Image (cartoon, rainbow, N blue to C red; front, side, top):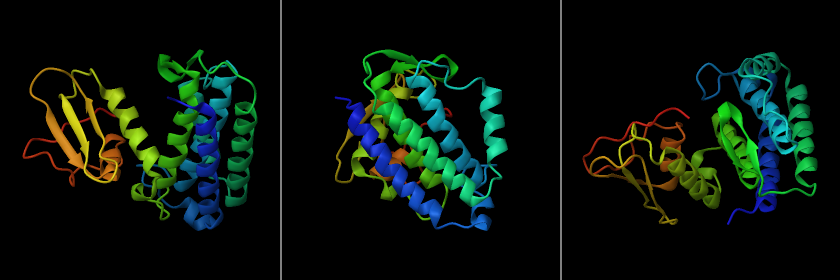
Length: 230
């Protein structure tokens, strides 16, 4: 069962880890490339801060972003800022989100996200957790997919498997974790025999989230299913 308050607590813990990592950087490191093509580490941090404000907008019943163009423009505007400004923005935007999350709320209601996507309000804190955790990895400052909390990794695999489920452009796929979680998920379409993709949870989430190419995963000789971009 989804527990938004518990997820908000996890967001706070993940944010503290991120803040500690950023605090150890300097302006030269900040300006260097992240693992996301075309984005510096400053772009990643600007996105994380603006995403916090976007989550506040969702929870308060406003559009997530004014427009796709405004979202991109805000990231480009904020990416070149010096480290102290980025760090303050990360803290302040996280504090705004935490304050809104602490208010009484109907977590059963449906909310509007980007591109016409809707979801239960109760799932929004986990969506924020995904942003903080995966973008921490994207910074390429020593936090790896293998460092993610095991519970988070299993939930993110489940979340992404649901996202690709029923899509005819993804072959029917069985996903099996070979490490301690022992999880199993099914995704993709229904046409044809399923492909089994197995490996450690970190490698699975890296493939599903577009952070790794999946070359280390076992497909028993079958082609690794191609996944559409998130």
